[in-house]
Structures are given as structure tokens and as C-alpha cells.
Image (cartoon, rainbow, N blue to C red):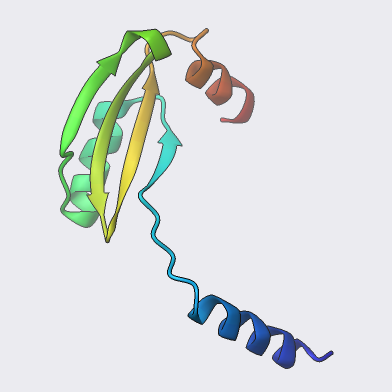
Length: 89
């Protein structure tokens, strides 16, 4: 099957599936710096911001398009998000 026909099949398939993505999470080292960058780049401010000690994170929910960007920063280097950033950057 040619590449054009393959993409045509994919396009038809995805055209009938509504995709509603509530949020995407990203891990960052510096929540404040990331929120400043998002405000400068996209003109957006967080709708909420909270510290979740039981998960070891500080988080902010930022509206972006028809979805949200959940920005997570570790409270400590040994939290799950802290270990993720140490391992994957």
C-alpha cells in the first residue's frame, strides 16, 4: 500500500473520532520560571496552583487551546517527579 493511501486511511479514521484531551502534564524544575515563560509566549495565566505534599509536587493548571497544561515541579529531588527529571531531564 502506498504511503498516500495509508495516510488517507488514517485521516478517514481520525476524522470520525472526536478527540477530547483534558490535559497534558509536563515536569519542570522551576514552576515560577515556566509559568513566566508560558505567560510571555502564549499570554496565559494558571487557573489554579497548589502544593500537593502527598505527591511531592507543586502544580499549576494552565489553559492552553481547548485543553489544559498541568505543570508539575518537584518539592524534593527524591519525589517521583524529582526522580523523573533526574533520570530523563
